Length: 318
Length: 223
Image 1: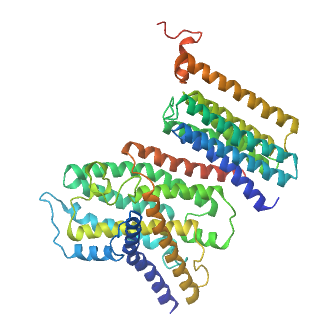
Image 2 (image 1 turned 120 degrees about the vertical axis):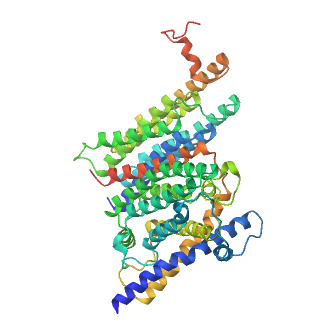
Image 3 (image 1 turned 180 degrees about the horizontal axis):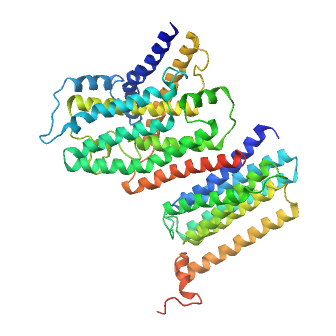
């Protein structure tokens, strides 16, 4: 019976992130539209889009290889696994032992690699330029992300997400400059990785500015549906990571009573909803950057992450 | 000392170091001046917190001097100078932003390594303040040598002085006489800098110190 409950809880966690992801996408779109004084699509529009794309014919280029056909599913799978591992409403679930921060970075790296490969597979100019830019951004964002992981791991003493969250909920860690800096660096990385405004614009199809959209431009039908779903799940993954690492209050940690789990679910949904509202507000207040400014933007994130690690070395005592 | 007191001191001193990095990161003169004013405010908060923690009321005076002189008067005057010289556009750097930041990170690591051997005798707070202060001083120096514009070099100098005050207050406070004389010498230095700026500008129609290279002793170009 206890085993069944464990499996059920892990299942809830796995399907929650996928089911809630398009809704969060809808919220960001809606808020952004309202900020620009437009009405915006209804909140469930992303679900309808996915439904529509699933039923459309998938058009393939003549010279597309199997890589091109497999890539959307593989990328979605990698991102889904990563998102299902991040603790959302409770820690210590059945598969929590495998939720390592560094493994998570590796899973996301895999998904990105697969998509970049698919972007270059057909051999059009857009796919190539998109893939090369995506790789450039990744090569700048990943070191910053790893430094954030190290900073958090130095505070908590482990890189395992579930344990980190449990420690941050139960043990007061005090006012930490390092965690603030790590949060700052992490937000920068998340913006870059999710192709949001100062780096990339998810709504544009203007040739010179596209990064992610250029890479997946050739896709249609069910393949495109998988890619869009993967993008939405990735956004929710980063939201849950911020919630889990920096604002873990309300999570069900030791006792798994119905009340604790309900509370955990409610606070989790509230947290990601707040972030889904804050993201477009941030996006509308800045302008898109030139490609050559990306290293400066992500270099700032890297510097903040490195400072966070250094400050921890100072304050931990030598 | 209670953990909360330590955490707040850590927050303020760490904030100063972060602002030093922001100074290096900015590429507009007005933004540089604003960040400098913020750093002075962080310094005065940090010193005031030390006054509370160490129970040393004279440090409050130090904090007030830092707030008024370096948080208000000097940034205000620099803003006026920048507006009168019409140079509020981009900051010219000798080396690019990325390498500067990397060098800065290296300097922070260096100062932490330098303070590391200081083991017993002093509290953890003193040691930490010393590490932060050394890093702020080195970053101020870095800012002075990587900028071509005389105004940003002055800001680098002033932020270096912020680091000195932080170091002095961390080490059981400093005598008020010393603090006053340092504050006044900073003001005098600032006035000299101001006059100097207008002289450079009058002579060369720019405040880029690269123009001074021609008049150095070794006579690099004989044009």
